[in-house]
Length: 268
Length: 234
Image (cartoon, rainbow over all chains, first blue to last red):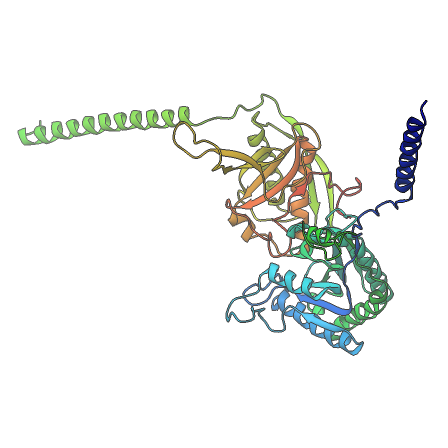
């Protein structure tokens, strides 16, 4: 081999070696950061009370002169004063006989409107108050939906409660234990009651039944106060232990995550 | 001995009687033919020759339970008519004196529709060429709020159209309303295993609740609702 050929081969080898070394020393590009599911916001000091029915919708008739809408409103007022005294912010879907839309005189709130009010509050508990003349004590119902592991970024309205079902079940168990301690007969079950499946909070239907065989006992102030105090006492502990479910980031949030070479997060 | 004018009156009366008898006979024949023609035009469901066992999930308001009970019924062969006949029988039981879940008498189910799953709809497709008859082309699309697909091949969605006369008279309350719906769902599941989902309409329209409480907008999964079966009303 001639000296010039040896020199060319050596140069080629040196260039190849340098190229390989430079490739090996270049740090690997970091994987783009993908937002992980995170718990959604939860206002631990906020409770939503939905006194069911109202206005032209009287609900069921309890006895000769008692309407469900009146019992639910009376219980809601008792609960509100007890909860406010314990430092909670109470959001009520109606405070009068009829629930009316703000800015639309005469237009009654629909069940979806009530669910919207509750969802905007991001409350630690949403209680839908009902009353019945059948049975005795307090009947608790949570959603019948199958539990979802995480909350989707965009929720179907009729199954929005799915990710909250485990929390609602825990709240139902806590309230049930409190009722037993208070000596109130209890029925605990699951049912599809509008609009509980559309709520994005730990949600329960609390149905008040007469204390005994006499249907008029449902209006007893001592009885209602005992039930309200049991609920309020439970919610103090519940507000500390409630957890909002993991929520998947929205598509927009994923797209807006800044890539390493695109720190402004601009869209390509 | 009759006078002449008496004979004339007599024969006139005899003539009138004969005329009226003829008219009555003709009208009777015409009415019979009309009923027969209506009967032949009406689609009749073939009734099974012998009664067959049917399971009814009967609700009990006293303890909030649902129990499965057997009845013998002659059922049509058509699945929709069969479904409706079973539901009519179930709700008729609740109207009987001494019922454990008393509901008002009268027909409750207007119609039952059985749709194969998954349910899809059709929308106009402007990008596709028009149909030969000049109408806009359509393409099948999934429903806007798609439910789960069939668990098994041949799974169906039962759409039960209730009468408003039944719904408006239904007792109000979370438990009593839930028991009615679960009783219907459980009975369908027990007798028509191809039904996987159940939806409700009232007079052909969606309605929020049965009587102020139980959700009628939801699609109910068909399942065993009898108490103690593991999937029933606790």
